[in-house]
Image (cartoon, rainbow, N blue to C red; front, top):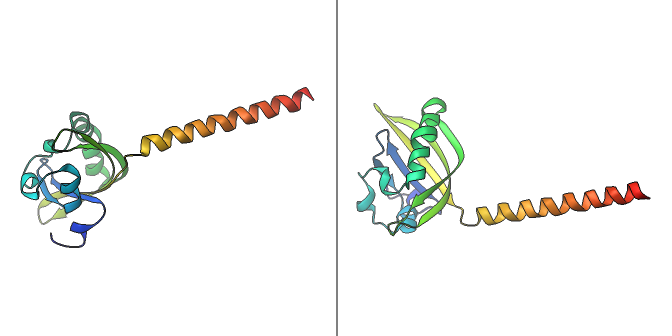
Length: 140
């Protein structure tokens, strides 16, 4: 798979229906601190922590089978040292001959939670200011 996708600034991997990793790109290997040979042919459990495996089996994979695609799915993947990496994934299920393959592309979102918390705090401040202004107008 030595293509531009292999060197793209996103993670990429494909899975067989049984969870076997079929392809990975350089970015995924770098982020997870693995060599390609350590991942290809292994089960996805090697990169999915327990919570992601449960979500994969109960929600994500059934969604892919029913709709053929899924977008903006938040999961975590696991580095070789066990550290978890937050990822936003888009996936599509394709047929390669008689074999169904799930193709995943994602971006690392280390700051997602921080940004969400900042947005929530800003929203609360704006709502409080609006309420105070409304109270002032009523008092006048």
